[in-house]
Length: 279
Ligand SMILES: CCCCCCC[C@H](O)CC(=O)SCCNC(=O)CCNC(=O)[C@H](O)C(C)(C)COP(=O)([O-])OP(=O)([O-])OC[C@H]1O[C@@H](n2cnc3c(N)ncnc32)[C@H](O)[C@@H]1OP(=O)([O-])[O-]
Image 1: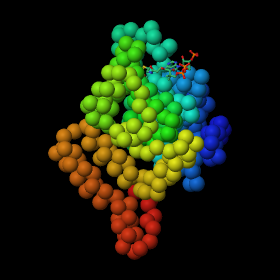
Image 2 (image 1 turned 30 degrees about the vertical axis):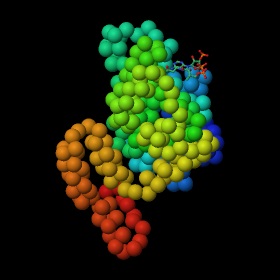
Image 3 (image 1 turned 45 degrees about the vertical axis):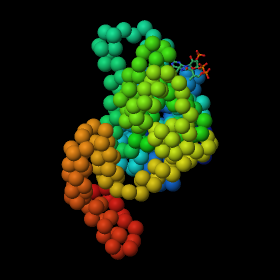
Image 4 (image 1 turned 180 degrees about the vertical axis):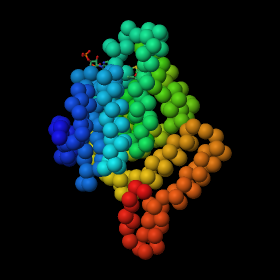
């Protein structure tokens, strides 16, 4: 069993049995049922800038939690100063068009976006550039009240490259997304909540605790049906309303092929809590 460092201000659990020795992230399992996987980005001196080794580790940890049947939901977080201040500018300073093409720059992001389980971003401090894009890749964003979001790539002569020009307009609409991307200005947590980028804002020291509660609440449901619900909501960002509704219907019908759907409805009628089996 590998021991990993504790997560500040949580008092929660500090082990993840399968955790390999990562250098850029800390991995733990928390919650009363030990069913919430937490990945803490851990390059504090560089404000958690997303260097390639960090992203490779993040992808591995996400995949590992995704395939661990004891884990109901995953939290990605940073520290009080930074969730992540973007791609590592020092690392990519000398990249060229052809080196990006040849190396498939950013392909590690697929490991996070392919995860079937819910991923919640718990954002304190800066979520800029790739950091904001990583948060938007998650399914739900909770923020501490001092969080700052932005796509400042324009300040350094480039544009968002990991979804910022595509996901941000879907969260906040065209005018606000254009303003954020074209100015490079930051927005605070309350503005981000008002725009619909963030679901809820908490005091800084309560953020992780509240995010764990959310993950635990999700963890009371059938993991199979949670996965189906996630797939269906995500379809709303991929297709037309007509095709999305058809997709939703087929997934809804599909829940009737599961034991957990039967158990959920039977439990309701028998006035008892459901006992979901992930079947
Ligand atoms: C595989 C990964 C792929 C990612 C996705 C790619 C696509 C993406 O859309 C492109 C980007 O994100 S483009 C990026 C978009 N993001 C940006 O443009 C934001 C850039 N950052 C900033 O503007 C400022 O650091 C802040 C305003 C965040 C904080 O200001 P403050 O409170 O005065 O703090 P400070 O003194 O400034 O920083 C402390 C230390 O952290 C260091 N460091 C920080 N960010 C770094 C980074 N991204 N990089 C490297 N290092 C970074 C900083 O150098 C310093 O270390 P040093 O050893 O002393 O030199």
